[in-house]
Image 1: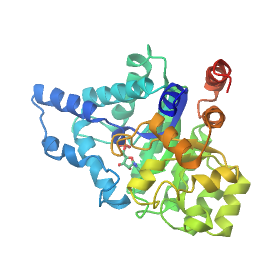
Image 2: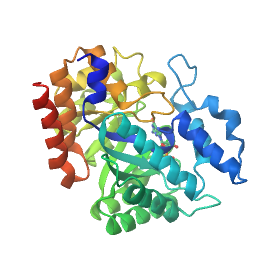
Image 3: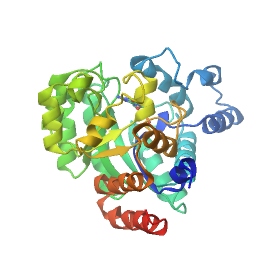
Length: 347
Ligand code: 5GP
């Protein structure tokens, strides 16, 4: 099977996808049309072309945080947030994804409270996408730019919804501009959520801050995102690298995101290689498939071609992701799906 077809057919798990960064152009146009038809047109159409950050773009990681405002303008009503959630999950399903942990930051908008924001996504996942074959769950995000008070409110909402819908709201995470805010300030909120049963993932080492990487790894999150500046070759040091290797904390790898935001020079010099060779658990993810114009199968293909990973190993990489999902009760059904594929194609 050629690598393109193989990567599309391979059952895949998406563990790092921000809802408002994952909106395709098609989805954004649908949302825009709905708002216009209902007398709520906004000015985001002017900026739609600025939403994507391609390979040769001059914008870097910190500029990339501006583009989310374009998506936020479109997902500020319950209806468009629900449409965005359903359309995005469907696109992942069409790309051969059998499980997704979509993440999103609860916002207060003129049309919704933070609770209603979460309620809308949860109900969409439980009702509107229920007839799809893909299993979808939600990770609640805390933005590093938010205040201590807002972080605590988000933790409260996450705990409330995890208690009501434990198989839908499965985790909490810290994201947003890594140059802003301190991990320590968010630790009490994250710790409280963890004690209430939510799994935790942290954006870690996106920029060089060895002290913060150590604090994060010592917190023992269930997974980390990116993990760029941990190996000494990429701005980490021996201490950060040894701590990661010893901890065996799975790393959510986002190849195109790191290249397009210039966190990594190019695919060939991506830290995936060091992590994979050192047997640190890794999961291939998209991060923001809308912003970076990618898909999960494309990320698998890039990984295979860049690092010379043959199809049987790629299938096992995808299978291994089952060990790191937050909805633990789904592990068996997902690994059976993967093993059926592996056996069918004698991989
Ligand atoms: P949302 O949470 O609104 O659904 O998705 C967009 C948000 O995800 C952004 O405002 C930002 O806080 C977070 N985000 C998306 N991509 C990245 C990334 O590559 N790095 C970090 N640190 N945060 C991101």
